[in-house]
Amino acid sequence: MTTARTATPSTARAINDRLALNLLLEQGPLTATELRDLTGLSRPTVADLLDRLQRTGLVAVVGERGEQRRGPNARLYALVASRAHLAAFDVRSGGVSLVVADLTGRTLASAEVPVHGDGTPDTAGHLVRTLLDTARGVGVERLHTVAVGAPGLVDPATGRLNSTGKLPAWHAELLAELRGLPGTEVILENEVNLAGRAEYRIGAARDRDTFVLLWLGHGVGAAVVLDGRLRRGFSGGTGEIGFLPVPGTGGLPSATGCDGGFHSLAGSAAVCELARAHGLPAGAAGDAPAAEAAVRAALDALGPGGPGGPFLDELAARIAVGAASICVVLDPGCVVLGGELGRAGGAELAGRVERRLAELSPLRTEVRPGTAGGGAVLAGAVLTAGDAVRRDLFGES
Image 1 (cartoon, rainbow, N blue to C red):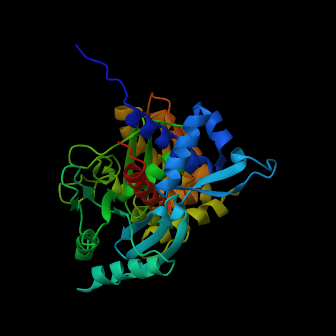
Image 2: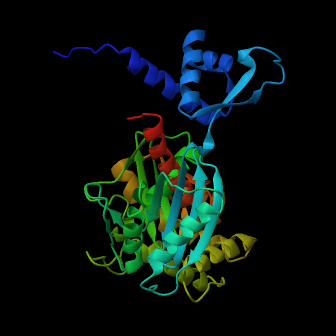
Image 3: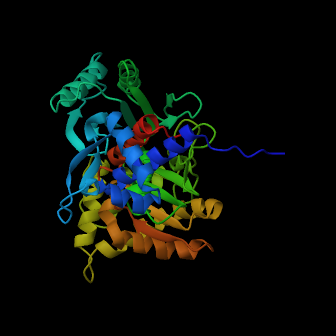
């Protein structure tokens, strides 16, 4: 038999405080009257919580409503954005992008730091010093939380980064350096999962609780959100679709390499090769920027007799093969195309993938272009760090 627990006065106050703080975070400055209307709380309760939150330094009066001249209800209350600061990293093989943000997630400063080759013995230390210098440049002396997006598998049990390929040693060293910062929580997450979180919260999947982000860049990957929850799997490997066995690659992947898997069909090198076969320009490097440029060139060559249409049709058919394998297992109802290629192809590529997918799968699936932009990984990292700060400061579980 389960016994219902009665909320204590302190529990009720904590719940009311969190409710008000989240409203101020989502909607910006509000008057006491607006808080009463939005929360349904009484006048004395709202007055009490505003007084309490001001004493904790989380809320401050920032002005008055123009249409209200007098009285306490005319005061505008807002979160104190400087109460805590956070940072986010997008870690790649060739360097990092980083941002420093305030409690509301507003970017205060950013930096791009290239890393050549395999880096040096001091690469990780240099990157952390760059982060701290960037933060101090905008008056931030302490970072509450740093969220890091990196390629590879993040073990849900240990938080360790495990590579499915060859990653430079400075990736792990950077994490160790960050975790040595006093008083700073460090959160590690797979980069595609962070991009998926950004699409869910601020991008193309804002109206969906279940969807899959298909990441199309140098490699391929997926972020799986089911019933509003990001799914990582037993070892953190959910979405490692580069290893997905698919027809058309002439081989099979192995436990140590994704050549022969979906990566060989839709990774940037394969897309560049396909573009050249259709007479479109594609950089010899075969990297993500070269493949992105090839897709954009195809969009510019969509006229009658041009190579753009046939190339996009064949690319869409390849992407649909991988998407169909995901859809018949998970039935997400929605696939978002992200990464450099998904962003470049936009609605034109998404529409072609959707039509081809409908021919391969009996499950109705909408395909949308990602809208979180080129900074989706960083955006997801900022959201993740902000959630952690809020859990701490707002007392959320």
